[in-house]
Image (tube, rainbow, N blue to C red):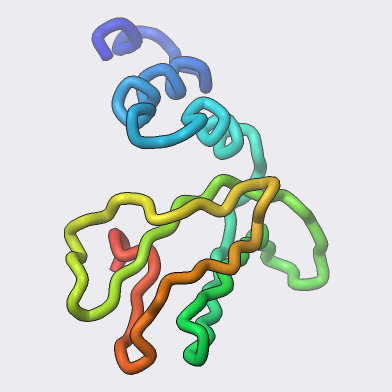
Length: 123
């Protein structure tokens, strides 16, 4: 914004600017953004599909260079998905992984004969 254009910004300034744009569509936006600003590292999200039930298991873990390290940081991670006939331009959030719920068994009701893409905005 014009208010912060000529000064050094801090995480509170970043949160204020992003909140103005994204808060209407993100629950607890300040909490989500503070988690990303203050938690070191970044998550690796894994999706496992069960073709029988149509459900998916979505998990997160902090990315680590050394596999023998164990660190339990968790993040707020939005996700979305699409199958072949779906709209890839609609990137609205389908669900969330959270620090309190870093694993989700999600009933996506997937067609077992179709492929699926998660995080379709970055496909």
